[in-house]
Every structure is written in structure tokens, then in C-alpha cells.
Image 1 (cartoon, each protein chain N blue to C red):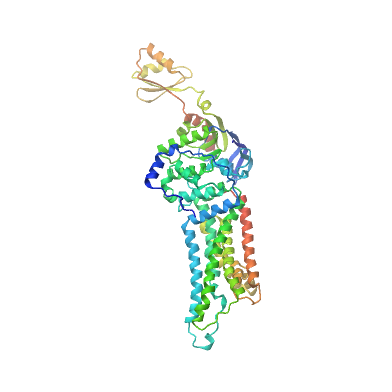
Image 2 (cartoon, chains in turn red, brown):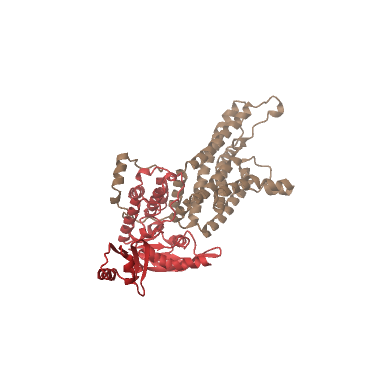
Amino acid sequence: MSIDVQSLSKRYGRSYAVRDVSFRVEPGLVTGFLGPNGAGKSTTMRVIVGLDRSTTGTALIDGKRYADHAAPLHVAGALLDARAAHPARTAWNYLTSIAVTHHLPRARVDAVLDATGLTAVAERKVGGFSLGMGQRLGIAAAILGDPGTLILDEPINGLDPEGVTWVRELLRRLADEGRTVFLSSHLLSELALVVDHVIIIGRGQIIADSPLATLTAGTTPKVRVRTTRAGELSPLLAGSGVTITSTQRDVLEIEGVTAEVIADTAHRADITLYELTPLHETLEDAYNALTKDAVEYASSR
Amino acid sequence: MTRHPARTTNNEKNHARSKRRNVPVTTALTVHRVDLAGAVGSEWVKFQGLRSNVIVAGFVFVLIGANAILMPWAYVLRDRSTPQADYNPYPEMIVDKVGYIGILLAILGAMLVAGEYRSGQIKTTLLSVPKRTPVLVSKSLVAAAVSFTVGVPSAGIGFAAAPPILATGGYHYDLSVGDGLRLVLGSGLYLAALSLVGVALGVLIRNVVASVLATIALLLVVPVIPQVFSQFGAEITRFFPIQAGSLLLAQPGNGGLGPWGGYAVLAAWAAALLAAAAVTLKRRDA
């Protein structure tokens, strides 16, 4: 089951939250949906599951609108808001009310409570839940219908480290089973560890749509060098396309030359290096580079 | 009905917790479709899941039941020393206060919907049942069924208790079986229709405080405004939900709409508001 978004626009009043957005989320992969606040991530997800109507364009899951499927919860499970239950309701009552709509057996509710570690608090009111427990309950609700597609808005938000690991493993497992996993996050470093594919949105438009590996490759990595003779090394490396910055004493960050060249140069000058670290470009760097224009444009208006 | 099937012991809970990574998240489920029965069942589970709902319904039952016993009792106990005061009780006294008590169930109906918008539950509801009309239908059915179920037996208490209580004061309770059925069933029908007015206002307004205030305004405040100004205004007042609907629970035969005519006007209010609610729910973003 894939998610197909075609020329989707959503206007609230006079401003567009999402403008002419098209992308496809493939099954069997974990696809990350990235963007600054207000970029249109949540709006896009809400339109995909039919909570909001698109102004123009379509958003289909497995070729149909979410609402047109006979068993919607089996097609897609969504976590759009950690707080989506009345505070006085118990976790068990909340999940049962969802299960009953599709005539799912009671045992299924117990199974997802178990899988999310909420069995012990099933009879407690959700108003007393921590943000992390609320997220677990939201994930329990999302997987209740054994969905082919998962649509999760900030699922890692508020989870403790154990919970983060658990979500990561869960998403990986669900994708490996051939399901479509689509999640948004602003915790880029967490996303880098789990996603296969990244879609970046800024100011309501798609900025990038590519595999994670492609996104982070292709730029010269920085190299961090630590030596007591930084002042002597710098001029030896200086040249066109080389940037040398120093953030602290005896430490240089060098861009435009490989670690091998730096090591050879230092060796020839008999300079001892105490550290020589290639700084792999993170997803965050790629993301910042890509969204920079969008953000600057937005603030200059 | 919605009890946890097997309450686990602490040991079992800890065991389950330590094992949870091994528990299959996904089991081979046969595909279960969403349908109206499922939507109604879900609304019923949600209704029961909030104690406040049960308390309000129970409170209305107690109020109507208490009135049905206290009214005949008051007839027996009152001062009957003058011949003018010694008139026979009117049969409709057993449902005397149902007309206004019903406002509580209209407010409950509004809360069933607006409360979901406040808590965010509406998103879960619309994800589980994405076609929106069935959501409105099932909410309406649950609100109406609860109201009917509260109204019939509580009025029935009066129907059963009034004759013996009045007999202790030497009164004969003159209520035909037909009229008795009209009052007992009518109490349920009236409350059901009024709760639907509340459900519709909840959908249209969505905000808890605003929808409760609007319900009170439509049922209590607005109707008295026209009659202040003219005789013609008083004619308009008769067509408001409570004024028209409670004719079903009043003594018939003073001309006008009559019991069922009055109820038809209330039903038309409920139907029109629900139709507007259905269109709104379908069109609006959740």
C-alpha cells in the first residue's frame, strides 16, 4: 500500500498551508517527513486520512481516499495528536471504542496494550498519563487495526530513551513486514537512525524527496584537527576552496581538503596531530542547508 | 458490558511488561469492516466510559421519578379545608416537570459532541469511522436511546404509584390506559427528541461552553422573547421546542397543536437541526 499525494493544496482562509505538493510514500520503507514548524507536515497528514479536505488535488492510500475503504483502520493507522482522548476515559475504554467500530475482537485490544507496555495502566484514566504514555497509547491506537500504512505525526516526541528505541525498532519491523511507514519529526538526529527515505517540506512545498544516503552524500566533509601547532599548519593547507575555522584553541575545522591530505601535509612539516576526525555530514546539516532558503525567504517578506 | 475481560495480577502484569518486545504487534486479523452497528457500538462504549454521562442520565431518572411520587403526595397532604381547594388531581401531574428536566438531556447531547472537540477525541472518532454521517447517526441513536430509556420507566413509576398514593387521600386517579401510555411513552419520546436537539447544536457549535449556552438559550430564553411583545408573539412562542413538545405531556383538548401535533413540531426542530448538523459535519475540517 502506497500513499500517493498529487498536486495537493490546502488553503486556510487566504494563506496556503500546503501548495501543489506531490509525492509518493513507498511500502517496505520508513519515510521521514521533515520540515520546520508550520511547513505543512501535519496538514498534509490530516488531509491524507481525511480529517481535513484538500482545497485542490488528491491524497490516496492504496489508490483510494482513506474514507472510501471498507476497513479504514486496516488500511491506515494514524497518530496525529498524542492527546486524542477524554482525560476521564481509561486507556482500555479508549482503545475498545476504536476496536468496536471495526468489530475487532477484545483480544486485539489486549494485544496492542501488551505490545505498547500499557497493560498495567489499562484501567487508569488517560488524563493522568505522561506525554510518553500518551504517545504509547496513540501508537497502540494506530496499530490496532493491523494497518498496511502507518501515518505518525511526531511519534517520538516526549518518549524516554527506552521508548525512542522501542519506537525505532517497531517502525523498522513494520516496514520490514512490507508496510508503508510515514512519520514526521523535528528530532532529525533520531530520524536519521530509522528512516530510509526523506521528504523535506518547507513553506508548504516539497524541497527534497530522496533516499537518506543520497541526501547526506555528495558534499565535502569537514575535518576536525587538533594540534598545538595550529598556527603553522593553517598556511600550509590554505588554498582555493579550502575554509579553515577555529572554534577553540588548538582546534581547526577544515573544509575542502580530505583527512589524508591533511595528515600528509602535517607529516611533511613534522607537525604532530592529536586528532584528525572527518565530520560526516549529518541529516541535520543537509536539512539545514536545504531549508535555509525557504526560511530566509519567509522571514524577509 | 465494557469491563476488562480478565483483570491480571501484578505478577502477570510484570511478566507481560518484561515480555512485551516479543509480543507480536501484528496478528493475522481477518478483515473487519466498519459499519453502522460498529459505529453505534463505539458510541455506546464511549458513553459508558465517562462516568459524568451516567451520572447525568441517572440524575434525570431520579428527578422525574421523585416528581412522579411527590406530586400525588403533595395533593394528599395539602390544605383542603375550603371546597374551592378540594378539586381532583389532574392526571398529567406525574410528568409535570419532564418538560424542563429534559433540558439536562439536551445539554448532555450537546456535551457528547462538543466534549469530543475539546478533548481531541473527535479525531479518533473520525479516523475510526471516516464517513461522517454514520458518526452523527450513531451519536444521535445513543443519545436518543439513553433519553428514552431514562424517560419511560421514570414516568412509569408515577403511573404505577400515583393511584395508591392518591387513594390514601380519598382521591380517584382518573387516567385512561391510552392517556397513561401517552404520558409514559411520551416522556421517553419527548426526552429523546430534546437530546437530539442538543446533539445537533453540539455539532454545529463544537465549543463546549458555547453549545451548552446555545442549548439553554434555544430552550429557555429565546422562546419567552416574542411573547413579551404581542399576542402574535405568544403564538410564535408556542412553536419553540419545549413549548410545543411538552404538549405531548399536557392535558389535551384546549385547541391548538394537540399532544401529537406539538410533538411533531419538536420532532421537526430536531430533524432540521440534525440535517444542518449532517451537512456541516460533512463539510468542515475536523
